[in-house]
Length: 228
Image (cartoon, rainbow, N blue to C red; front, top):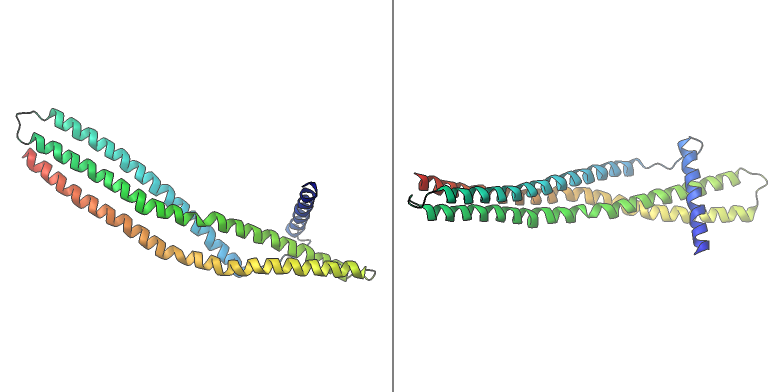
């Protein structure tokens, strides 16, 4: 364990040094403009999903609060509506219908909108880890590449040491390129998935709202008729 820890610390220190040299402009950095575009899309997609999840969650909390407020109002109206007045029992029934509609809306949005949204958003942390791993492997590759370049320009280089450095560079390059290739496929696919997901998710939301408002309008029409 001690040896593994020492190796990890050494590797992290090497990465930190390489990154510092790159930031200072003292070492060149492997660039990939297409990947950078994929990364921008990924960051925007994750930010949009996080914002949508936050607002949908708050919206459902407000619906539940309205459900409680509606029930309290309905209970109060049933109490102040005097027994000898026509339709007191019908007033209570319509109040219960209203409460049921609020509860049904909250349940549908939680079950059919928020849960799929949580699942959709759950893809981003794992993808973020893979992106960060690619970044580390890229630094490893650049570090080994610069080491080979330094040895290559040294006329008094140790050939065995130079051969090992080239071998390490090729290994680092293969590891980086495998991750890079996978992300070049996975990031655009994830980005494209946003379209079908958002269409399906929003259609479910709006359909639930449409049913709720349509049925609620009927309840209030009945309540108005009772009062008349």
